[in-house]
Structure formats: structure tokens, C-alpha cells
Length: 467
Image 1 (spheres, rainbow, N blue to C red):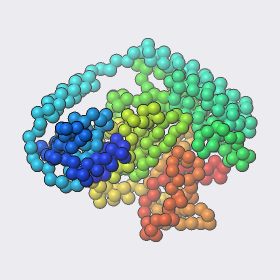
Image 2: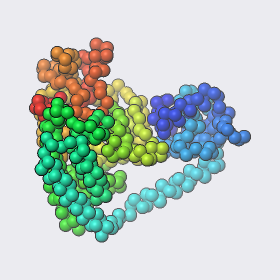
Image 3: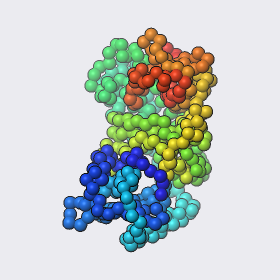
Image 4: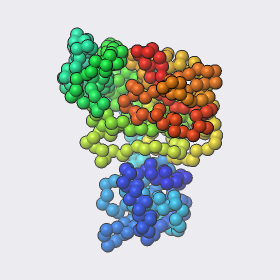
């Protein structure tokens, strides 16, 4: 069984209400029995419920990276509040007596093992691709790029100065056809342009003021450049994919994802995009409400203790399925991942895994973090400038900096390295992340000197500066 505390149980909860209710069961002494197996891989017990008979719940850690939660209650949430309460009780040190594994749990374990074996057999079989269906999809994407080109040319002919909230809304409506053409990435790129002409809530119900229009010209031009590159590179890629007898997606760039290819874990493994026995430490976490795509996006920023790379996890939760898709949360342990799948990308690639085991953070982990941080801002700026040159590159790369001090220069918050190089801290231009710079002055003075800073770079196109 993995070492876990209450924060681990919090992270396992499907939502905050379930975690609260699980804690409440422990406070109310609702558990009449608390047991664990002799080998420590199973927690099980009985919890008082609304019926005559208590609910039988268990938390099975026979595979620590993929715990299984079972309960006789009718809840559709996994883990339910009874399983969460069981784990909270264990984390809080409540007495658990050693008992034999119940027969029904032993039987279910055997069924799980059988399913795992079948899945392993399926994974080992050569993967067959319906090339006719894939060719049809590629041709639909090519037609979608033709539409994107038409929409982009319309925007150019109209001119940024004449683009209004009304015309941006009309383009958004036409862009929905890109989703039908299997081009959600292209649709998102077009939305990045039209959203510049929306208000803070993402609505196209107001006209753009003169001052606001002046602010967005440079960004709008950059987005048009990106759309042009996406059309050109996308066509070249689709032509090459059609000419390839195997029709394999590209793994040396992110163009497949830009065009909407949904990578499966098996595809990433087959392509060799996997790292074994990885350890990840989360540096930041936030949730973004993507109004255009009608979904919430949970983003975790992680430091890979092995490679020293900063990587991202992204969990997409459509509005219509919020009840059924588990929300991610902040994670305060080290995630030990047997197989880490890495998406094609550049500076901060996306990663996914099927199972992980938490362990407490150690002093060596923090020292590794400190050693990997860049203390020379000049060198970091060079790397950032190089990485954002390509029109389809990530324009907001994340880096870990070791700074000497943070302070104010006039109205600006500035971070400085040991050589006196300075960077301006700002929240402008990052609508999808919560503001944080205003919180820096609230920190104790000792945390504003000789510490680490996780920062996302953004190029201020008007001032021609990195911030």
C-alpha cells in the first residue's frame, strides 16, 4: 500500500462535496468496522447508511498505481463518500484490525486480473488501422483547411481595423464547421484571433473601444501569421500522411495535435514516446474555463525529477459531462509513474499516465529542483526567444528561475538575478490563468530573496520585450 495522508485522499475525491462528506462520516463515527488485510493491500469496513444494513466499502491497493474502490451503496461516484471516509479514517490513524479478505473482494480481484491479462494480450497484438476510413478523414481535414484559408483571407481583406464584435461572432459561427472536419486545433487557433475582439467573459456583445483596438493590433497580426502557417504546414503534413503507406501521425512535431489528432496512450507507447519509472513534482495547478470550446481545462505544471524538464498535464472536462469526468486538483506529493507517455511537443510537452504511486517529498527532491533552476536570466531569454520563433510554437513557455530578489521599480514588479539582469512580472495577456503578480508583495520578505520562481514567459509585441 502506498504511503498516503489526507491530501492524497483529497486528490482522489471526485469533487469537493464528496471529500467533505467523507470526512463527515469519520467525525460522526459512522464506521462500525475498520479492517485491513494481512499484507496491507486492502482497507475495508462497514459504514452506517440510510438503509437497514450498513454499506460495505473497500479501498484495494493490490496495484498501488491503480487503486480500486468498491462499495455496496448506490452512488455512481468513484470513490464514493464511504470509500473516501474509509481512507480518511486510515490517514487519521484510526485503529484498523487485521482480517481476512472478504470472499466477494477476492472474487472481484480475480476478475480484475483476468481483464488485465486480456488487455495485455490485446496490447501485444499488432494494431490494425482502417486506412480507408483514415484516408476519408484526412480528405475531410484537407477540405477543412480550405475553409480555414477562406475565413482567414476574409479576415485579412476585412482588415483588423474594420473587424468588430459582430463580424468576429459571424466568423465564430462559420468556424464550427472546422470541428465537423476533424480540425478542433485549427478551430481553436481561429478562436484565438476572434477572441481578441470579445470582452473579458468571452462574449461578442460589445463594440471594441479605440484604446482596446490599439492594444490588440500586434497580437492580432501574430495570430493571423499563425493561421497562415497552420494552413501551409497542415496541408504539407496531410499530403505526406496520405502518401505514407502506413499513414502514421507525425511524432517529430506537434502539427498532428494542431490539426486535432487525439493521441491514444498506446500510440504514444508504440512510437517510443514513453519514459519508464518517472518521478514528477507538481509546481502549479489551475483550472481554465474555455467558453468557446464549452469545457473546463485542468492544467498541472510538473517538474520531471529525472529529466529536469517542465511538463504539463491537461484534463478536458466538457460542460455537458462535468458530473462524469473527474476533476484534477493540486498534488502535494511526488508522483511515481511506471510509464509516462510524452506527447510530441517543444519546451513544455504534455504528459499522461494510467497509474501512479504517491510518495512524500524529500529534501533531495527540493535540492534537485533548486539545481535545475536557471540563475542566468540572459541565458533563459535566449532560449525562450529561440523557442518561440516558429509560428506554431508555444508562445508562452514555462521556465524555472532562481532569483536574487523581487521588488518594485516604479509601478512594475521586477525579478532580478545575481548579475543584475531583470525581468518585469505581469499578468497582462494571459486571460486563461488567474492573476498572481499582485500577491507577491504579500509574501514574507525572506521569500522575496534567493528563491525559485515558476514563470510563464510572454512576448509583449508592442514593447518588443519578454515579460
